[in-house]
Length: 438
Image (tube, rainbow, N blue to C red; front, side, top):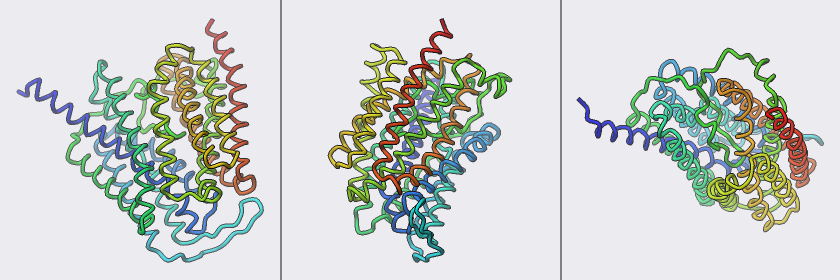
């Protein structure tokens, strides 16, 4: 019979492997940030095409993640992780292929609305690569579900805290590595090869180190109380939750839920305007290199982690969640205002405000949303919210590309306006939620 010590060692080995899988997923997801905008430009695209490339990932992840989750419920997490990681590896190989193809022009567009851009063969291959990565991009979410399978009620919170630390470390190192490797004579080829190698290592890690686990029913999203959002991005859930038979109609009838879902959509919309506009702004107006852009995102990630750690711990012990959410929203207004001033040094100053506002606002907002309805309704509420966020991401990435063509840095002023409107709406929504609970 296997001893208790042996079982404990086996469990620790599985936990370390799943932490490493999460780190690899975050590393690959963030590694593309510093050079993707330069790649799109080299292939003939503009800010609209850059937004379209980002939106394609989000759109296909919205389709693929639930399918992968249901597959993992039927046949096991390990098989789903293997499929997801293999898809990521193939996607990086396709992206590397686009770097080797001739810049064959298929057609060109000149418009006052969407600007001027050229659709080339490598650009279409790049789009296909990001779409495939999105379609199979459930590895981080399935890893979360796997962690639930191997955790107990006593250590689940601690295990997810370590999982978050692994993701955060990946989001810090990813932009730095991508920026440094992209600055070499091999330009984008080296970081793409590195990302493919990392994905292949993750595939081997899953195959050799993770035993199959019988799926368990998840009563609520395993990360509901964990801030999974970093740099305005969030991994889509890739698992099913067991909730009551509440329909969509009954869920949105919960007091406060419709208003919070609209706020959720508005916040994601504002964030994704930034994630389309800023990389192009940094490359064209600031004339930053991939290395400079990579270190900027690494700096932003580092400050975000500090805010989500000791700063948030102190703030939540001193102030109520509605106050923190409102304060964070107002700080984000200031950050977007500083981004709109078109000054290089102020960009880092704005990044500090961005991290502070996001780090305080989002966890507080999600805690308030998590307090609405019954525990059995949380799976449905969180699922609808995730869908609202996904649609807002797609719309925001596309709109950001179009708006930056005509507005330039004023796009950030529009983002500041959206956060200001969100802050005003929060004040009334939170007050109504408090009155309904009284």
